[in-house]
Image (cartoon, rainbow, N blue to C red; front, side, top):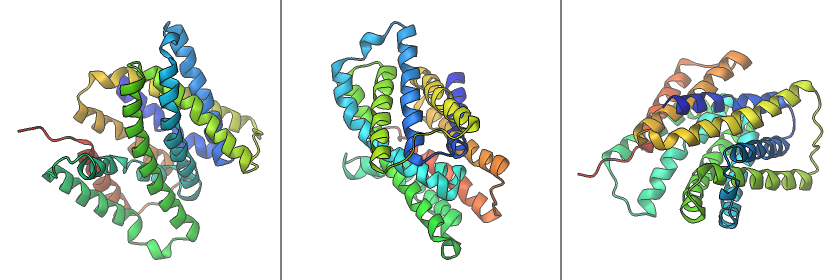
Length: 284
């Protein structure tokens, strides 16, 4: 459990590093994923598990990386428009989207827990951004939309990742490494197509990108991947909520994010709803 908590805390700084990097969104993704993927590659090498990067893993990781690239495409733009805290909160609505997919497509029964999670998350979302929607700038409104699209892409990524693990092998770190490297290449190609500059402007940007790639991505996911199978599912969902919660706190502390009591209540309701949405009821 300690490793999972450490991983969630480390990853909570990712959105802050994106903001501090001060380079175009897809370039941030390129450096983060390629650097993070290389870091995971080194970890696999040190563990003597490079052989786990099989051709099958690379084949299935191609599809997971597409959804992961879309996730970062929207999330990094959302961060630029609405700040790291709120953007990360929006992305974590994926828990409820996954529960909805399970009910609609996998024909799982609708249960009281799901109904409660939907009610709380919708209420929380409204209090966070719906109450003052008309007063927001067009850029801020677009950032909210991008954040919710991030949640959709993140949910699709998690579904495809689960499928990749079932088809490509049983070593999660190898899959995470392959997906990260391929996602970095996708985002790099997108940045080239859009004419974005890969120049790192200063030492602050270099430091932020280094921490983002090797610390937040490689380090954070190393701890999470190594610990997630040893912790109960309900506890995993609760612990991983440290990420959006702390990201929101860091946004207030580091960037003086203005907040209102109504917004804070909305955040609290959304977090409870997201947690309930991540749970799977016990079979009677």
